[in-house]
Length: 123
Image 1 (spheres, rainbow, N blue to C red):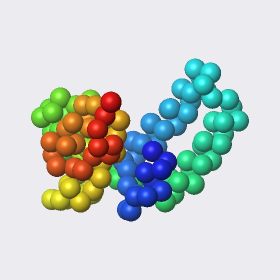
Image 2: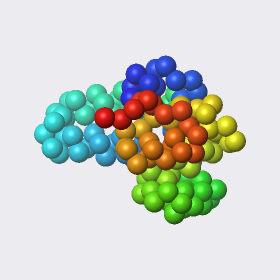
Image 3: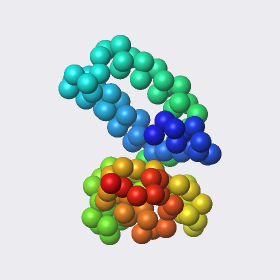
């Protein structure tokens, strides 16, 4: 993901990503995959990169669209929020943005609505 952030322009994400990343860091520490020092480094590096991102806030229009997407495509709440955020940025031209995710269901739906997906295929 960090490599994608380096090459993407513009770099955009939903506000939800902030919480998801921090939850991932905490889970890595809790599961013993990361040391406290590694988590501190990740948090510092993440904070630096976060400040370079365009953030899509979860406002009323994004929330309503996420609700519609959740129903239409049977998405979980977080998936629907990410997709609605990307659609907010893309407007009427989803192919103009690359949509990166590693969740199979969200990846599939992103293709259905017209995004260029990263990675090109999921294992």
